[in-house]
Length: 212
Length: 382
Image (cartoon, rainbow over all chains, first blue to last red; front, side, top):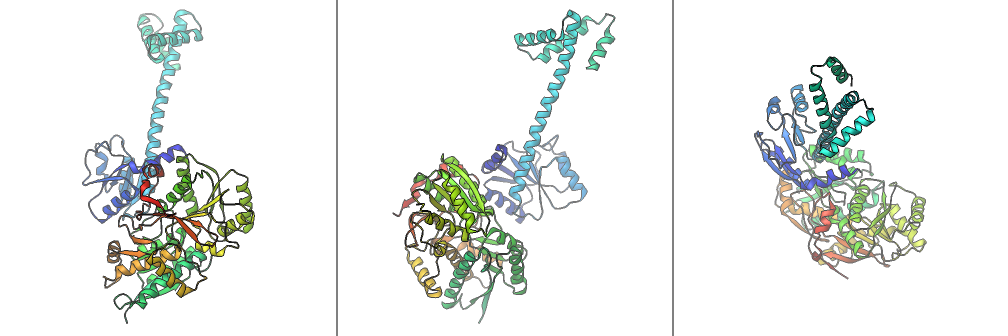
């Protein structure tokens, strides 16, 4: 088994789980099962507008679309949520998708399946968070590549040097000033734009930027 | 006279027949005992005994027949997790109660099942501790190919890794494996540096393992077979008496020296004869009927909800020791012991707890358990 999967199992007994469900027999069943699994469990109802930041996972009854507007649900869930649902009509399903729940159990609540739902919800939520972080990083790096390439072109033209030399120039500047190459590249482009404001080749600059 | 009809579902055919037959004997013995003593305030226990032949479909079919046609609301039965899972929806739907007496891998709970066998925190942990103290750290994991051995080995691998031991191999044999398959495995074991075979092989494969060791002259000093399942039942089926020194972890051995166990063994022999082995399967099946009986004494009907509440309140002076059901998880407090096989074909008990151990069927992380384990709770009976 992967290290990540193993960790998901091992952390079970240190989890703080919040159950958002009216007080009844079913809620006791769920709370008792979570305790058997070894989680620390708290309960609340009605659904609160804020969630204790210590909470690791939420089991939440979803009855209608009203949950979508809650501050801890928007813009995206900070903690994994396992939805508890009694109906499968499109309003509820749309709500589940809208909120971005990563686990599900049906009503009436049975003890079997709670453990798997809990782990799946945590696994998918973590995977999504890791993927989003990776994508954000990639976007950033893509943008900086574009900016650096443009700065290299600017330097080449201005100083009549080769691309390799221009790139090395930016790199050295970044190292000595302890800034990222992207920041140096941006300032080169900005400066160049300022200096060429009144010259006859602004169109060329624009063309270069959009071409890259 | 008024009677209390109950269902009994143990297989006397198929791969779990050895264990099922023993569980049936324990059940019958307890019912006879209660009825001879005048029943439960005059109400006799009337068992309807069915043989599902180790087939999960038959378990489900017969459980429904017992619940719907015969109108029982209590079933004593099931040997494997497959059979328990087959009966679970039946008892949940009818709000009946299944008393399940077999050791299993944990991770199950139903308000309609009372688990009276040990789960891994009451079985595996003790065996690993014992082996650790004996300096046995090179494990060959061998099991029958089903859920209990697989999950057992997950737990054992965890424990072994924590104690700086190592697992040299993990192998599974089919439930109805041929002797030759075990013989091949024994050759493989000898080709490794293992000094312990952790066995969860059940049925004839288990007895063949001990016989093969005997025939090849492998002594427990060289390689010890440490089992989570081998019992007096296995001993009685072996061709040779095993070389003494192989160990088993179990809450019950027939050699326990207590008045309760002496009486149990005496009655067992009177009922079934001296040649029939008395093992942990029989003991758990016997004790759970007494658990039911003790709970029923203060009830006038067989309503499952009231019965369950009453079960939480009563205790039984079982042959293994005083037991009770934990209301948090429907599993039972157990007395983990280590027995060493002797030339005489019995177990010498080398470790007994001073207190019963609370069941923790959802224990997933044995790393913490090992760190927090409290040694002084145990003493050597040697």
